[in-house]
Image (cartoon, rainbow, N blue to C red; front, side, top):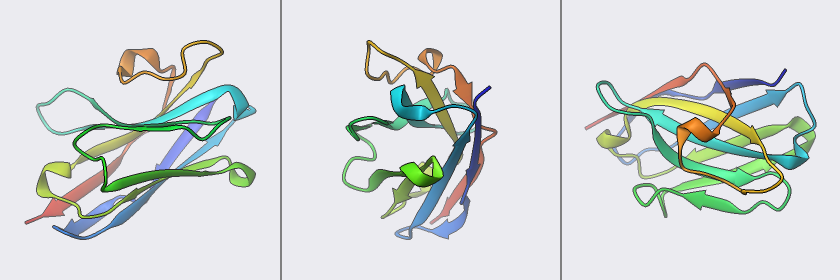
Length: 126
């Protein structure tokens, strides 16, 4: 069973930075796609970014492109989301997600992913 544990959320002023971590366990993740989603109160869960474990290809939502960066550490089975130039509209609960796939490399739909972490709150004050 895959387990995902997020950490690194918190309160930051607009323009500041945070780094979220997603520690994965329970599998060898060489054929997995890992992603971050976020959900603000009263809104649907939305795609933020994804990384293909094998080849490190990354994908970003337009709203975060140029500000957020995904990376991973194979030795720790951990994916990082570096968030810079944060805006109040980035405030949300951020979730890590994972999908084992040998065909479609990634998706920006939450329904595509099989495993989810518990979420970590990010609050950006103006």
